[in-house]
Image 1 (spheres, each protein chain N blue to C red):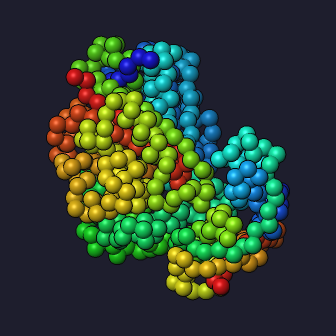
Image 2 (tube, helix red, strand yellow):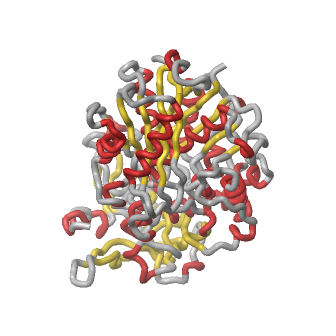
Length: 132
Length: 389
């Protein structure tokens, strides 16, 4: 992936900043400029919100046949997490055996390496999650 | 809007077809459909081609004119349109062709779907498929397409008590059906234990919960119904088409255990056709994973939410049961040449509605439903086909 393509999403991937609809108060991540529920009413009403990174596992899968970039990590756990703010997010759960995760497990975000552009390319960072 | 009929069908074998290129496959399916309809080629007004990812899979973009050219249509300057909606590319090509004929813009249209997946390694193909989900907010964190469906499966198990055995029942049924389809990639019935104990791909989904990577192509010829009798004694009418969309990323949807795009597309298709789920004798539903079929038969209205696994285990979706689901073998056993899938579903429905399906024939088949989805369900297309009475 081109470096700029990763870099331009860093605000969200590094800091977990989303947007909150000023009309219905629903929170979105990544940031959106329009609330899909309020549409036109929400234009100009979407406010930045810093997410806590804390939440619980809605569902998860332990990946045994993964993408080439993630081969060194197999088996790894991917999950959909509902954050305290009500927004859901996809990320890996790390720092535990894959079978320690369950639906309802409480997690918090950690800042980690996501991948790299080959042996000499840039390293990509972003959020993963660990059990609390 | 004019009534539209399918007057010809053609299909290659689905599978690992090392000796055939994308253009070979597209041409073969197209020629068979032309032959079936008794066309010379000069009657054609346009070609629609469903294809997910030729650019990445065979390093060739702009494949619609390529296939049209090698089908002998360059001298005719035939307009050729490529249609992409991930794994729903074929279904979307069919709906675009249908609308072109229904609207009166074109009379005779060929709709094809083709994908050549084995010119790249399995890992690369997996990577390309993952991009049909949200690359920036799902795949980039390591989510594969299988793992996203696995999360639907795990939640379905948690909320409705769906079991590994019930997932396996989908694979067992579809392999049995595929064993009766000469074009299927897998023509061998399997035992439940084989599916249940297969190696994990994305827990809780194992190898036998996943459709294969395949090469293949399918084609149908469309014509206005009032002109169809000129070409065939058994035109099959396209009764309706419904398409719907949803959030791109799975995590943005309200529920992991239903696909709203399928629900809305089906409602539209049933409404336009003036039919109800009980009026359908056979359905070709999208079973890229076993859980997808279970959710589909619920979302399409054939079974109550949460009952899809049990219904499958109880044999209610087997050949000539309550509703015959994936008589072709489905993506699981017939094969999964992504862009061809939706058109291949139409081919199976026409074979069944004509009464030409041999040992896998559905009794008294009057109406068939086709269900094709893209990505993790951000596109869904439902067609209903019927015999002309």
